[in-house]
Image (cartoon, rainbow, N blue to C red):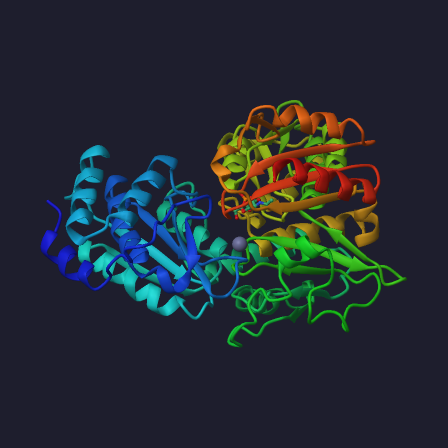
Length: 533
Ligand code: NG1
Ligand code: ZN
């Protein structure tokens, strides 16, 4: 049975605010940090139940609100293979978070135990971490009370990035197995990635220093550790590392700022030399944006689509050079927000699939390829190597030295890339590997294709639930008749493309438009927004 007495006592310390409704969305629970105490306590209970359900495997809990403003916070669960929580449990999470009283909470927990057929005699293990937000420590205490109430065993991974927490979950659950993901410590993560980076860049020209905008968040800590591990192999200059300055997190800096504003973050303005590479992390270091200034001081952004293109083309070449192209297929997954020029470039070379917004959709689609590259335009993404593919690399016998070199690079890539989730720092090392191999600067990378001008706008509507989509969110099925009007407008613009979908994380409807000319993409976006409003 559930330890009802201890749940009751501790739940009374974390009452649910009566007037608030919480929703486990694409990024877990995310809202004002000051309102999340009861939610995080209950997530502690739920994480314990999830672990019991999975025979005592270790579950992850991350307390972060990523690129959101500093006052926000959030919490999400990580499944044993380092992946996002299974969808059916998102519903359990929402029900449990909204139970109005302690008694209602107990009823809701008992319903989950029944529905999910949980054997309560199993052990419960959880590993957890938080970002640098000031609301973090108190929320971690609430989370620990949740573990205590259920009798779950917790391991505190401290203040670290979301992707490191995902790494730890997978490393813990694969420890001492043939699929071991690495040492189950932060140090193990840094060693694994740095060592493979060094192997992949051995003999290459030493790169110019790379500037990292750490968004004044937890990425600053991880980037500093990489700087130590990598030393001369990759000189790193860290900017926006003020993790304890109130109000600094994600403020006029970070990957989301750069993507949205399409300009340099503060803290870099006086430091970046023409042509020098720089990149931005977001507040929990799972998104990455690259950019550079040209000789005239113009800003050029290399976003998730540019990263996907660079990386996919590199891997396709390696597979071919290894002599494995007849048996190992590389594919790319994007969303409707991918720039049309990137989709065109990729589709001429390999299979490309478009799925709904949200990392879990991309991740699952990428699992269907032997090697699946997925990136959202906003810079979140990774590369997945299927288990059979990794086994094939291990037992394949190359017939020439060139094949052998390419094979070794592929094997080292499986170690360099954090395959559990998008990881800004792992992705950064991946980009640096490709640039080193190709002898590319940002300019050559950027010239692989030219982005189509585009515009993304938000529209506040009275009822965003009225907006329903199909075809990977590229077309509206309701409100009735609206899609036909959008189609009619789009036809008037050369290279025009536009779509409308309700946001999964904000109470808005998003309108995206592309066209051959900048003024046209802006105009199309605003005219479509006018139809929506
Ligand atoms: P919504 O709010 O559903 O558009 C946003 C991002 C997604 C994804 C999620 C989760 C855009 C246009 N949308 O989703 O790509 O990152 O947040 O954080 O960037
Ligand atoms: Zn993030």
